[in-house]
Length: 210
Length: 417
Image (cartoon, rainbow over the protein chains, first blue to last red):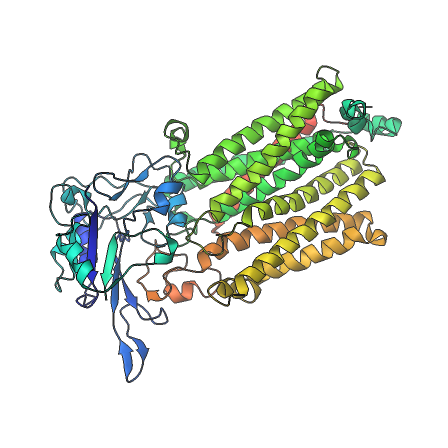
């Protein structure tokens, strides 16, 4: 079986937010919608992109690019009353069917990674007059939940997700976690890593190298 | 069995000890006041519908709900009204199910209040949906593993059952339904009532994402909270109807209701204490939940609940304090306390962000009051309803009142003489 996963090397991430922008353009995201957000690991006391720790000897600047974790045990899919969000058995990607979503937002409160799911609180509006990104990206709809698709329209064609493409630090890796020879499997095997909120038992498919 | 075979008769004849008085008032009752009430409720319902249409066309961005606090007043009120619906049905069905003496002639009115509250609960789920026109999918693509799906099934069953139960009571009085059949329906209704509160609790309690919600205590706790506000509502409604001359509420029945209310309030407080202790004792992340409630942004709601419940219990358990005014106050306090509880559960769940150790950019869709940044948005309560939400909520409540008043006007809910 194929189980797509992503490995993000936090030692290489410089916090440039280009992957967030690449995601927004590729998926033609409406105004104020971000599926991929770059969190700053600074204790949450300071604003984003700000240094954490204490002056002068203990400062740190570290980032955590965060989007849907495409969990193996997704809390969202379990609670969706109509099966609009589900784990694709062929790829392990957690998908979202806009046409089916009734907008109850149960998945948003069930997901421990609050903020990776986003609801279109109004009619999608765009700064540009034309759509950007992949031609197979489904049209955005008002009052439904959406989130990172793992660039399903690209990855199902064997092409890397858009967020990887422009990463200037080459911090992102994508591949099949079930294949022990894949780059992602090798990285996890050879480096120490962490996963987000492991204690919730969701088994994320995103690994952060530390 | 002889003792229980005439339960229905016994229960509903209880208040009919002074049929003349009730009958005399009956002729003069149900005129202008009731019609005016129906008209006001109708107008508010229509206004609510208009606001709901506005919310759907203009977008839910008009509400205060956002990605990080994705549920708000509607789901709070949904929880609250599911709870309110408990009292009537349970007060009416427990005596019949167990074959004990009931609360007099209030049985049918109590069930009517349950029906009205259930209508409101369903209404609040519907106005919360982004795509209400897709509700049919719930039946076409049901994911039977979702607690929300369970709730929809149980709530629909509950509404139908309450109506059937009311109908059965009316027919039983006419001698058309046997008391055994009525008793069976009572038992089924009672089981369904317990289920509806448990399932509503599981919408929250089964989620590992919010520590505050994720506790096995939540289901029994929802049942006890429902009993508190449900009994409070039935007491208030029956006192009001008794004043208005619609029915005769004997002192004995009233005292029985009040004692029950007191018992429920104490059980609910006990559960609260158990939960707080379990959260706080390890001194780990649960302590954050307790701090948020006791001295944090949700403290006003916490203290109104605790003090309100305590005061209600004192009134209920002190015979010399059981005066009509104070009983009404205790009932109102009990209802208010549970409303505060619902606010704590809903807003509290979102108030503590899981990835709070990381800073993120905020935007107009991220969180309520995003303008001053994420940290500032969590300073006070992370969510407070927008005007349109108050308006729509008022409309849904008005719908429930409308249903109840129409029931009073057109259905034979009065105790039989």
